[in-house]
Length: 279
Ligand SMILES: C[S@@+](CC[C@H](N)C(=O)[O-])C[C@H]1O[C@@H](n2cnc3c(N)ncnc32)[C@H](O)[C@@H]1O
Image (cartoon, rainbow, N blue to C red; front, side, top):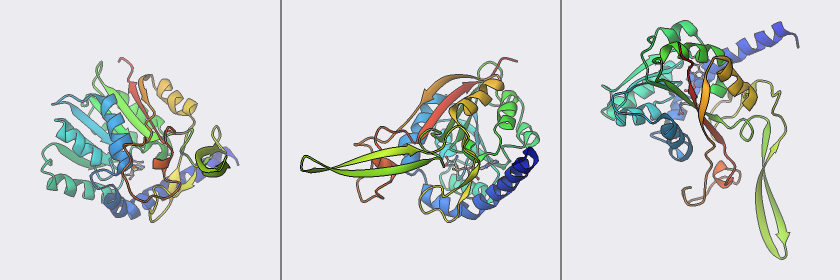
């Protein structure tokens, strides 16, 4: 494929992404509510530890979805500006935030995270911290976001925390496996992740969380590319977590055999903290 054809295909996928997220915002809101297991046990706690929010700080939540983490930040005493490119998501997030009595602490805006002008209009040097949960792998390009965060964060004290589907273990390039063996008369089950693509995984559509009504495009990046983009934009990574499910945390009850909750010790999520360059 030529570079022009590649760019054209990415633009088509970017358009499809917005249509897909608009179409499934209501389903997602019902599934996520105020936090599904992924959010409550993996994403939220890791992001919260890395952010270390102090009351009174101003925090930007990029690609906020139904605002589940925005409300958590608000309840920790932060003043939150939360953005998403989906009008449907922003409407749902606002409604939930009003019902939670946190409307005075969280402002929602429709903003495309890949649009530098829209992002910069949020306010130069306005934010003590920024977060982007489980969305960088949904963006066709992350360089514009990293470039604008340098200016949106307050000089000297800002930090950007992101969580993504773990590029090595939870992408379009892996197959989740369950094997059963008869080991000396006992049936033993082993969960494994088989990696079929990593370094040059092309953009492609994926089903998302189980039950999502429509697939959406993914732009998974290997670790070198993900962190490389941060380094290229002048950020320093000084915090990293790889949260995974563990026995006592998962909720009881029937699950799909290949649910991530059964893959103990293999992290489906990667969380990192990036410090912006001095300016
Ligand atoms: C997997 S959801 C995560 C939502 C939320 N951060 C959470 O953790 O629950 C991905 C979100 O990214 C948003 N999104 C995808 N591409 C975007 C873009 N270019 N600009 C802004 N939001 C985007 C989608 O609308 C969706 O709300």
